[in-house]
Amino acid sequence: MLEEFDEFKPKPPGKKRNKCVQILIDNLLIILIVLGVAVGVGFGLGLRHVWSYDDYQKIFYWEFPGRILLNMLKLLILPLIVSSLITGMADLGSHASGRLGAAAIIYYLTSMLTAVIIGIAMALIIHPGRATDSNSLKRTGSSLQADPLDSLLDLISQCFPENLVTACYQRVITKYKIVKSDPRVNLTMSNLTNVTSTYTVDLRKPYLVAEDGTNVLGLIVFSIAMGIVINNLGEEGLPLKNFFRSLNAVTMRLVHIVIWYTPIGIIFLVASKFIQTDDIGQVLSSMGLYMATVLGGLAIHGFITLPIMYLVTTRKNPVTFALKLTKAFATAWGTASSSATMPLTMDCLVNKNKINLNIVRFVIPVGTTVNMDGTALYEAVACLFIAQVNGLDLSASDVIIVSLTATAAAIGAAGVPQAGLVTMVIVLTAVGLPADDITLILSIDWLLDRFRTVINVWGDCVGAGILDHLFRKTFAKLDKANEGGRDTEQIKEILDTSSTTKDDLSDESPPSYSGIGNYNEGFVSEKDQGTRL
Image (cartoon, rainbow, N blue to C red; front, side, top):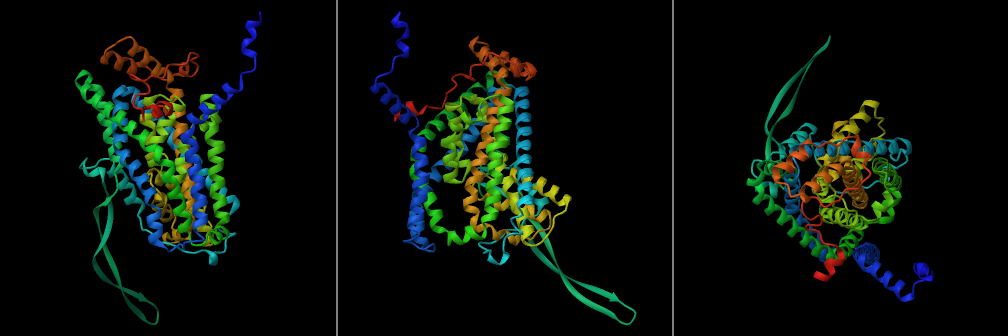
């Protein structure tokens, strides 16, 4: 009888100690990354008393380990995007991939519009620009010029690059040059005199120029199309599918090696930003209300809106889901780049939250490029802030234009540090605000950029979790088809004929998340990683 209650006996201290040690080992990388952020802030604040913000050479050398981290992460982005999307689309039927893409687009637009509405509401309620003394604001950097129509057309044209090789390191944008100054005569007639005045009109000619930077949109469109065609080829496309599957596995193995350097690189990246800021106290005092508005909006969207969307759709605990993404959040804050964080985001979703590999392969590369909740919210607040500083009252139609253009501009924002500043010029131009006033917020953008990057990553992860829940029955059928040894044509028929219906949402039996082949293919748990390294 006593043996039945053995499990309730207190465990020896040694076993409890071993369990605590095991927990520390399993979460060692997360702990190191968070410590790296904290140490970086400490170093930055400390070195400000030793170095001046204009000690450019010292800061340049100090930042070197951080640049190495960004270079290594960005090096893996291109093969990771291409291999993930091609493999994911090749494993899905054309009908299933179409439904998955449509659902992803609906989520992206919904979450970004919600973020913009929250940002506009916060700016209209708090009025950060009215309470800010415009004379105390310091202009830093230089502004850019952008035409909304040209930016939209550039966004569309980048989806279809003329050369796949150059798309890996260049993208084409529209610029203008003055080709002729045309003198015009203006005749003003009155009852007494005729006044003649001469003025000059500069004739501008648009032209296309290639600038440095990866054309991510073009690579995404090509990879999706190629993956769908490989799937339709059946057995004939199997060698190519296996090649990209192997490339994806190799890339993720490299990611697991690189991420152990992340804590070191983050220390130097974060510290250098604090050192470079001229007067943190003055910046915080003059821009404090603007910062509070942006951070308040990001907090509402990150802690309330997105968790509610996840909870209502999946009926799962969003806190547990978010805690398993700590590694990705800390890296996003340290690097201020959702693209550089993408490998760690995919790793956390697959290994920690057990999101289906095919969902992650599609949602995260696309979401990193087009789903920018934090950037959209930030641009809406910044636009209204600049209008309020200039004493302008935006009409209801202007506010609607701000919401739409902020959403559209965020789609075109690259997942690199401070890319939102470039696209925000589009929003300012759309409502007739001076683009030069973007320099008013440059002094604090480096800090706000880190918080909105975390929200960008969090929004992508919530989308992956929601789509994983909605399409779980589709992938359960796919798992059964693979376990039954069916050929490619039969699997494709199952995927193309299956649909996400109301029955999917009430399916009580949880599906296996093995995806095509091995679920953790290319992803290695931290425990295994430590033994293999």
